[in-house]
Amino acid sequence: MSDDALLFDVRDGLAHLTLNRPERLNAVGPDAIALWHRYAGEIAASDDIRAVLFDANGRAFCAGGDVRAMSELGGEGASAGQVVTELADMIHDGHRMLRESAKPIVAAVQGPVAGGGLGFMLVADLIVASDRATFASRYADIGLTPDCGVSTLLPEAVGTRRALELTLTSRTLTAAEALDWGLVTEVVPPDEVATRARAIAEVWLSGASAAYGQAKRLVRSGLTRDFQVALDDEARTIGAAFDTPEAAARVAAFAGRSARG
Image (tube, rainbow, N blue to C red; front, side, top):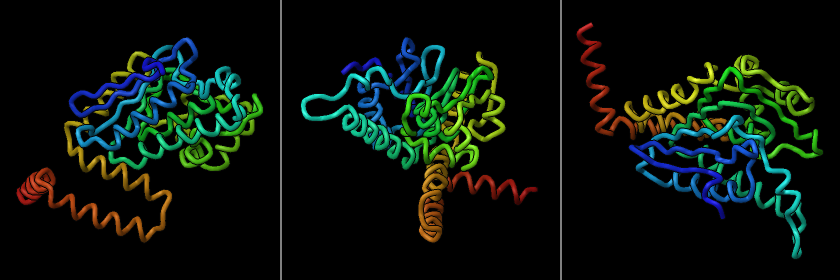
C-alpha cells in the first residue's frame, strides 16, 4: 500500500489530512481508502488531536472514486461489484468515526469536487471553498449511484429537492451557487483558501477546544437520533463541561465582566 495517496500529520493538536493524487484529480482508490479508514480511527481515538484540517494537493479537491482502478478490481471468487462494496463500507466507516468524534473539521476546497468527493468534503463541519471551485454529482453519467455518504450528507446540507437536482441532472454548481445552497460555509479567492481554513482551525485550538469539539459532536449526532436522547446527551455534556478547569475559568471571567457591566 502506498502511504502517499493520503498524507497525514499531527502537530500541536491539529491533525492535517491531505488527498495526494493530483495526477488523478485526487480520485480515491484502494490505497487512499485504506489510509482514510486508518487515519479516521487514529483521529477519533487520540486525545492529543483537538481539530482537523482536510485539504488536497493539485488543481482538484476530489473527483470521487477512481473509476479506472475500480474497473480492474475483482477476480478469485469476488466480482468487481463485491470489492467496490467492501471499499465503500471502509470509506463509510471512516466517515462515521470522523462525524461521531468530538473533533471539529475544516475543509479547504481549492478546486473541483465531483461524485464521492462531495461525500468526503461534507464530512467536514466547515468548508472554505475557492471562488473557482465547482461541484457536481456525475454518478449517473457512468451508470452508478451515490456513495461516500452522499445520499445522506448532501440532502442534510442543501435539502432534499436540491440534492435530487444535483444527483438527477448534470448540473454543475459554481462556488457562489454552492454558498447560496449551503453546500459550503464560505468562498474566498484561491490564494486565501489554505490560509483561511488554517485560521479557523487555529481558533478552535486556541479557544475552548473541548467545548468546540463537544458542540460539533452534539449537533452532528442530533441529526440522526431520537430528540429526547439528544436532549439527555446535551444535559450530561454541558454538566460535565462546567466541571472542567477550562470552563470554570472562562465562566468566572464572563461572570466578572457581567458584574462590572
